[in-house]
Image 1 (tube, rainbow, N blue to C red):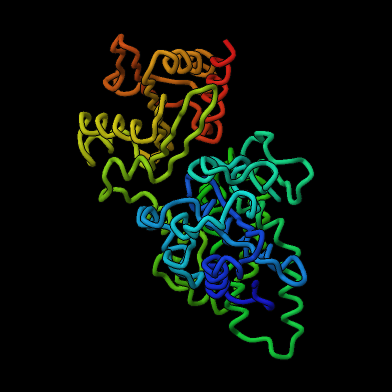
Image 2: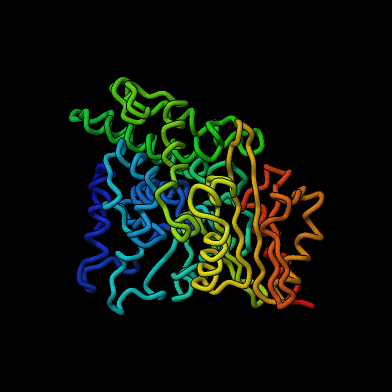
Length: 422
């Protein structure tokens, strides 16, 4: 049921949705899904679309790969930056297939599905809880996080490398089939302007997460050769027409890398109209290790902004407690990223809700707080508390600003695993 010849991204997603929603007897068997991680940020969402698109055309005849956005449909509204990235790719958020789009019948089971993971190498969240994505059903993985050893060593692709953006690895993997498709189409007598437009749409979709995740290729700690090489390749796919009339430059004429980056960044950082719950769930990941559950929310504004512009300290702590209860967490963490006065800053708040969790967090601080993360008490300790009844809260400014959730989460999870062995 895959399109026999290459089509636009929009038509590709229409085909994927029709195949998924077809009567059970007419669906592909197995259903092959490409899925990003449960934070569902730009990198995960865009990478899953691009990878599914080109993996579909890697075989003859094409084998449909369905890009599944790892979030509920309603959560797309929390991501205005996504809508801005999809527009020049000829897409709307309603075109994406989300978790709500999975058929409700009993014919979509772990046994008749296969999974290609991108921007993570272990499926977590609601799908994992339903039994999907076990090692025996994983057919490939492209990721830039620490290898958790879940993906079988024999699957292809199995590309787990350090890069600023996972999209950069996806582009590298897709480059051969992308170039071959372009070569074949250029040789056809009927090559059309529409196919040139498709090239630009794909390039625009891929450029956004790379620029965001590497701070426009300026982050020395994050930017790798994977990232710079991918941007060079992608900008080379932009047609002359698209560079003259690109909508991706924040309303300016022509494609301009810095303008594109600034436009997306401004939308990503706009959280003034969101509730605390929406802010906490916008970029969120949850893990279970050692019999404990930890959830980490990444927020694109600093704590001072959260406590003065969104609400106050009491409202924030009540909202965080309610979120932790909703997510059944033993440990809740909030990591902030901001640029006050042009200085890149990270803050970390950790809340342990029971005695076992308190021991874990104290072990985490003891092991990593001084040198690994260079913690400094935030706000004179006004958010810190120790009720003596099994709850413990600490908040710090993080001296090691190069350590994001990608590094901090494994540190916390290692402490959870160590506690389980004691």
